[in-house]
Image (cartoon, rainbow, N blue to C red; front, side):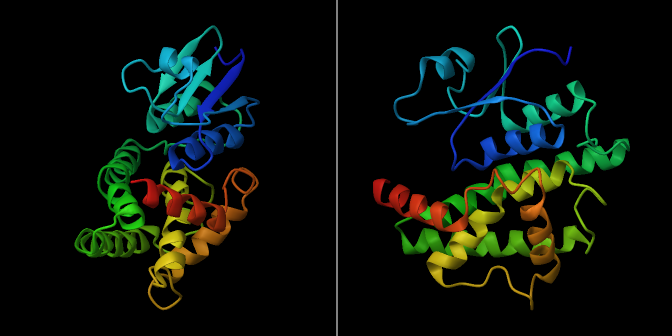
Length: 222
């Protein structure tokens, strides 16, 4: 079941694509990465692979078996490949709790993060920043000062939150704010440094400067 060619359709700036690639790296899975050059002019392969949502990321495994949506893909990778550490917790409650926080990140935290980066309305930006600040404080408490959200190793929540971490830094860089600081978020900062330097992660993250430039272009376009 774990044999066969693996392809990933994504974009370099997407935190959702980043998740998939980190999960594959953790499992030491070889794959072909196919960059979608433009989200306005989507490739035929993407449209064929994800005809419902028509968006990245998509993982194609073996004989044209496409899987869509980053959280679903990460779980699929964890179930199919036994190499490397388990990504989701083994305990049923911890697994459910991790999924709960992943849903919070995707449904509430990320939309506020995106609005804070690209919104041209000062009112919307202020409201979004307040949501982001609340979210960052929540993640600081959630980290509990451990090496990773998954305990001693990178796990499901590390991948989910870590894929957004550089975007938090982009907001600080572009707005001269301090969402992340030794005074307010020491655990999150230490975790971020460990996560970003991990072998499975460091070559996938695009970098704050590159993301900041992309964010400015996106804001101008919107």
